[in-house]
Length: 210
Image (cartoon, rainbow, N blue to C red):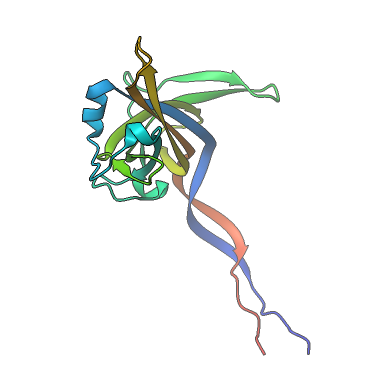
């Protein structure tokens, strides 16, 4: 059976859309260091009935993203990324593209914030969990960002690694030195502005179904 599509008439349409002026993918890394007794006080581990850490082996560390109350969350839920104002107004620079042309880009300052928890465990399966730790990371990126445009920042990926570092005294006895937490965040950053566009198009219509 032959199917005949419905006719559509070409006409002018006004639509509202976000025009993207520039788009970059970035990765920002940072390290939080918790040294000695003061570091442990800041983390404020809740350990319950954990025992035998020194006798049974070394500690293993991990961390994960949470909300302010310590509930595990995904990167899109737990991380907030926003633009910060730059002192003394807009700053820009000119660069040469691989094709040889010169373009002018603006400096954009971003702030990414969230919370994480550190979890320590031994080979007995016993563990200690820290209180939620706030962190804030700033970065500068170069974008084509004309006046009256906005920044959209989406979190693509988040990773967190923990290292428990010990040292030895003159008698060879091991003692706690510090806990290092390394954070890595991938972000999709767009400069955009909402614009009204006039298009010549045909409105979509469904075909006749049988």
